[in-house]
Image 1 (cartoon, helix red, strand yellow):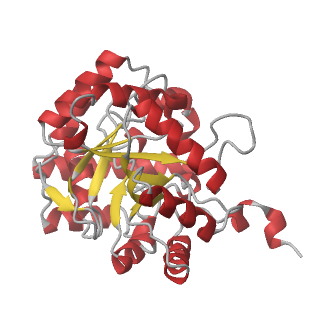
Image 2 (cartoon, helix red, strand yellow):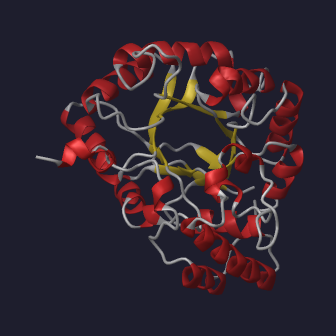
Length: 339
């Protein structure tokens, strides 16, 4: 396993991160299976585990907590808050009122007294930066969190939050967790330059593009991945964007074969090759998935392979831009752009 410094924190983290989104009902994973995955990941040298309060309505945090019992100090533990946790309108968002409660709930489920990295799952346009940063700074000073970060923030919001922290003498976000893969390269044009400028660590999620880069999705083969069962529209190859992805995958498969790599190694090696990226988050649902992804731990792509990837998917381009989660509200709500 390779290790890198997480932004400017001085904390050393593995270049592959164990994401726990599939623990619980989302991935139909039992506690024994989750514990086996955590055991194998730690044995392989992974030292950062990432989860969130909303994954399987808290089940993921509970499973992670049980799996790491007795070895908490050897793990960099990260979780997230902000997404709805019930129908109650204030059980979500980035207000002080909710974050204080959400963190206590996460600590209880995880069975720990602090988390190393607490992340705001999405930008909340209804809450000011200074409100959120003030709450996070107080939680940090109380010892309940060591650092805090953002997830899937638009580039301009990352900058605004940095300025708000400076102007209000508050602690700042030290990490960003964006979606990034060979098929979704938009953040290369805006987010990654900003994270480099401000020295943020970057933990990239969905490096396998929801399974498109796992090797399981190929031309002429029925799509039977777990994700396709509950998000069929993202894998319908009659949709132009999906057709473009499939065509890119077929070309990428040739690049991987010529380089003597699996598709997974190519995909993960691509993400961790970017100088702004600290780690790639893998989200195995089974031990077999984990082992196939751990095979990329030492993958280093050569310049000719990276050039071949650039020739297939242009740098800075998303092949499925409509699936991005960082679109500004002004583009989603017509009322915000009408007189």
